Image (tube, rainbow, N blue to C red; front, side):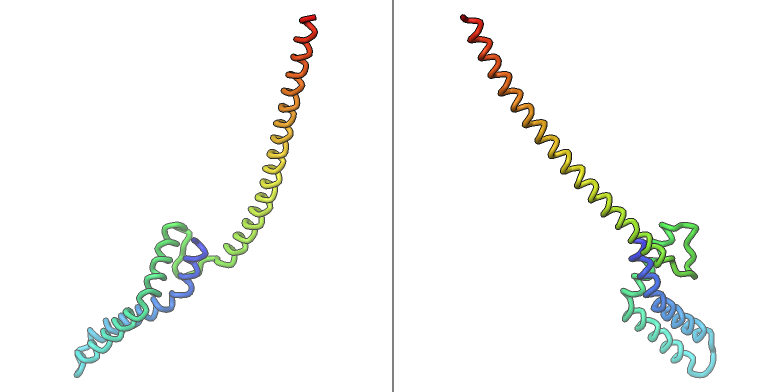
Length: 144
């Protein structure tokens, strides 16, 4: 999840920055009292709203990623810096290779346990047959 959200944070932060700059233009235009200012204010607001509407899912993905990283990394997350995605991907690759190696060992041990269990079962079966055979021989000897 860290890598996915970090990727979204990196990829979509330009959309959020563009949206914020359009709203900043709107706010500065709103302060103006020059001739035709109302029209400029309305154009700036429309541009900001249109951009936000067109890129809503990118902006939402960025905001979600930013919130996730803030929550998970707590004090270590700096929104001005990109998260260490490359480092995380390297660590993930190492951990996946360790996992596959351990999984291979686990499967081998599981097969060994199954084989020992089959051998044990066969030994018990042979011992039971042997016990029955010796008991019948002893019964026949006692009766004579």
